[in-house]
Image (cartoon, rainbow, N blue to C red; front, side):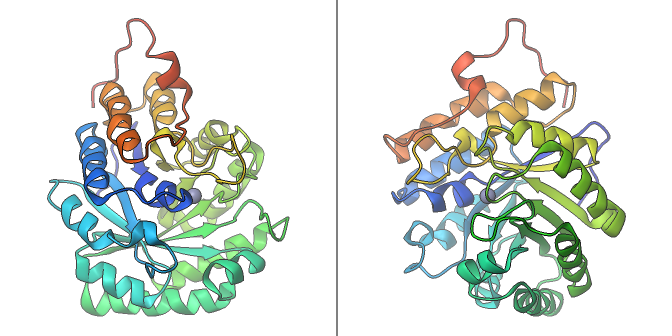
Length: 311
Ligand code: ZN
């Protein structure tokens, strides 16, 4: 990974993976491709385009190899995919993915429900994937995301010591960086500042991205707290796509449009053109008619005299 310039922020768009897997409707492949092209045109240079999981478990991702092939035609784009196990990693590497992200849950209950493994069994899987990468595809990036790092719907509180222990285990297992995910929208800014501070002390340059959800309206506040703690890579989802289909009004990931607005207004550079980003909602909506999209900035419009920092 090239180091970011000072004042630069990397926004990693996760809507085509995290967003789409939370929505019951399957987006047609052609619409996914149009949407990814529009995100790229807005300036996004890292997109998590899908996950390599069995289609019977997630029919939304059945076309992931096809979507990856399309994303690989966009020059300078880092094409990411989520892989929950070695088999997924093999398929993703065969498809030509640039960077893999591996979910390691800090909650025992969530881990068993999500990947049918304990957190420590999942670390074993990370070790196997890191060995596969080392032996067959050393050019491929590898990051782990500690999910339910800030609390868990099934288990409740998650011990911070356990989060840091697992992050260290992932680094020892051979990943390049380890991020923290607020999978359930439980995090608050004080906790985010503290836990990312600890992650940074433990891992140094291997401390990775903040993956925040907006379930309780604290997505932006939590990203700002992570920024204060030194984080420079942020996951976000266009239109806040995702959330829970059984909880009307519950939004999913932090909204990319609002996050870009916040950072650019602060004088930080994301490389993303906000107007073009808002225009990328059209192909998303065309592929998922009737799906609610969130975001305050798209609703309110850009402030008068809006000028973005030079990239
Ligand atoms: Zn998420």
